[in-house]
Amino acid sequence: MTVRFPLPVRFRSVLRLSADRRLINRRHGDHNKLGFAVQLATVRFLGTFLSRADAVPAGVVGASGLSRYGDEVRWDHAVEIRDRLG
View 1: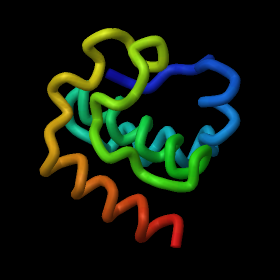
View 2: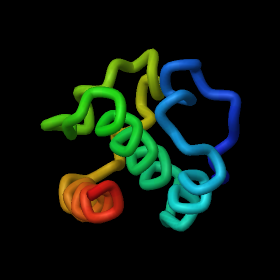
View 3: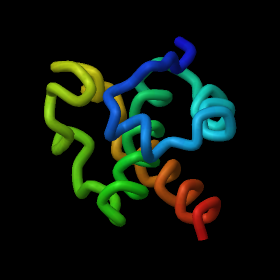
């Protein structure tokens, strides 16, 4: 899966399109790409990481979009995002 745009306006506004797209597309598996993108957008928009991947409203990512996005990978991605954003 390659992250495609357009995305909903709020989601789109917090992603730096070309740089973030390259970063997101380095993930393996659609669920990891989606999870990484959601975390990146959430940190930029809300200023914090969500406590659980399933806390994202279904309308944002689809009903089962994050069902395979595991906790270990989620925390690894959080560390990488934190390092990149400072």
